[in-house]
Figure 1 (cartoon, rainbow, N blue to C red):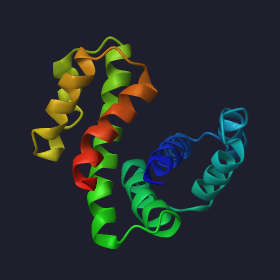
Figure 2: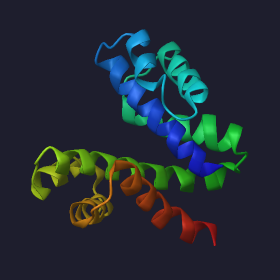
Figure 3: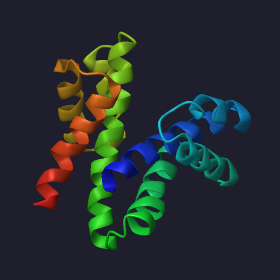
Length: 152
């Protein structure tokens, strides 16, 4: 169930970024209308557009932890917090992937995460920059590398 939450959170994060950028709800819905599990994606977009938030990143992490891990997957709160750490790592991988695809250097990608005060983003950026998968595979790989040891 938590892997489903990764996909839902990616949708929520994307919708939150779009909302903050001034994209209309209808335009955001159109982006997800033909995706797999479109009904779930559209419901997620609608939820995001009903919410008030300042920071799309923080909103997405909260969505993962509270809406999905706790409510949908019924993960205990302490484990949901650990899983939210893995979700953030997945989000870092997504940002790094987009940076790499846009031609940014590793150093430029590292700068995106200076506020984290941790070596984890640097490790993830390095992994993404040496990887060959698409965005989905990159995110799933980071998710699994983080969550599997926590699940054992």
